[in-house]
Image (cartoon, rainbow, N blue to C red; front, side, top):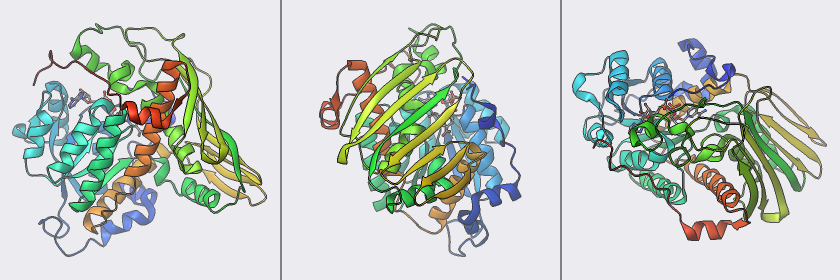
Length: 410
Ligand SMILES: NC(=O)c1ccc[n+]([C@@H]2O[C@H](COP(=O)([O-])OP(=O)(O)OC[C@H]3O[C@@H](n4cnc5c(N)ncnc54)[C@H](O)[C@@H]3O)[C@@H](O)[C@H]2O)c1
């Protein structure tokens, strides 16, 4: 299945190595000053060997960025569908014996000799795939959202901690967190430049990212092929896509929400999928901070992934692919985040390399990813229920989304 994301998000996929290093900034320095010591037993300046789990649109796209970095080489690929594993294998010249398919393909991939795994499968499988990667002693690079439910988020929290103990890198790929403008503006908020935080908003407005495909939605394989419009496999749009906005909001507020209440629906979409096309929620955070959240995934004419928070003395205003600034008593001019869709990934790839080669195993992206992912689950739960739900109630319920896999190939 392929994503109809905006042109700005597709642009830049053909980045050259010079642009790559420029975009990656300081983190890329490690590429040239690679320690003469061995990297997991490999020769100095040899490449980190990677396996890809989920050889779809994002997997193939990101594989090219890993390859362009220069410090990585894909040696294996796994996808549920054989044609996808073969397509990826042919493109990256991976040995036929190291292309795996079926539900357990990823397990066979992890049994092979490789240093790290890149997880680009549907969100429903991320906890299982990423945690198994770390369990097998591989460094893990995993796409957002990290999970579709509470147990999945908790599995990542645990796996991230274990990875640190086992001296493994476990990195979650959020582009905003890798962006210098977001980092600087949010650092200033945390330093108190806005004064007391009062309220604000997080929004994600876009068109129908996955189209409105017609398929047999009682067939498990068909559901897998169309996971982006499947509530269980994607976590619904609030988790799969809107997380980019809620991740920034929880980063700015630097807290998990206490409770949420909201509404949602499916009115402008068609096709066989069951994801909704809009969500609206009010989140209450500690210290009486209020966040209004609004999203849509249909129609045309307006796109934005934004977060704006108001404090007693100023306002932070952020847009993925647009401006990031602070206005008010202590202003920050900021700038335009431009092609953050690609640049953020380029930086994350360079950071992944730097952390592996320079043995930085703090895995600082895990905890904030767990927090923002759970924030999306809280909003979704409250919206579905139509009543206020507290964080504690959500955690206690520990609800797991179920997908019947009996009909799928092992
Ligand atoms: N800006 C971003 O950070 C960003 C952008 C796009 C996608 N993503 C994320 O990347 C991930 C992949 O998205 P995509 O657009 O590549 O989707 P896709 O459908 O193109 O690719 C997913 C692949 O996973 C395969 N797959 C399904 N079940 C599997 C299983 N059990 N084991 C192995 N493979 C399996 C599918 O066959 C498919 O080839 C998603 O989590 C998505 O949210 C992140």
